[in-house]
Length: 223
Image (cartoon, rainbow, N blue to C red; front, side):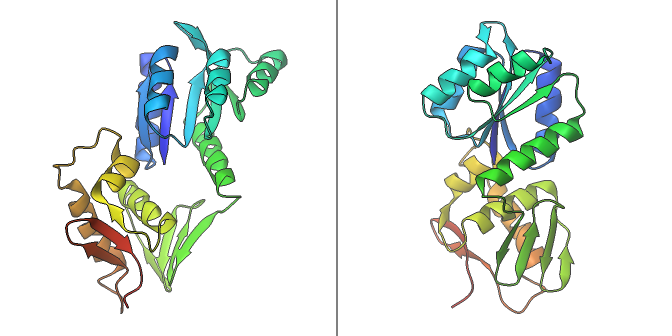
């Protein structure tokens, strides 16, 4: 899942980015309205976290422009202005949710997860064969066994599950699980896939993650 944070306060942006990345999301940060609109035009994001007060514009106008440019993801607005009229203006401009500052990161994360679940029609879990992922409790099981994953392993497996039976290139995986500027020469994907296989494949009777030589990987049941 890819998230764009448009926030001009450096410490706040860093705080949000660090927390979201630790939760397994791919995060880009823009510190102005112009930079945010440019990033949104050049990359596909599932959600935008948008501050209302920006140095070169109003976040409400940015939200309206994103919608006018047919942005299909969610918009979560942040502001120190907590009045009802301000919230209504933001929602009318195309925002999906509104969080007043100051806030606890746990609440921000809960709202992010709730919005992203809406995109999946309220889906709270993903399953393929005997592999199950609980998106709310962040829990993975295969058969009757719990599987302990790091945040990045969880994000990688989630991407595989959302694209089961579809061949995925290393570039696709890198851009959606790591970063839009992912280094294609890096072997980090192969390293993480190897770690993931040790946990969800090696202890079990049949394998789910398969290498496509010269292309990438696919999650599917063995023929």
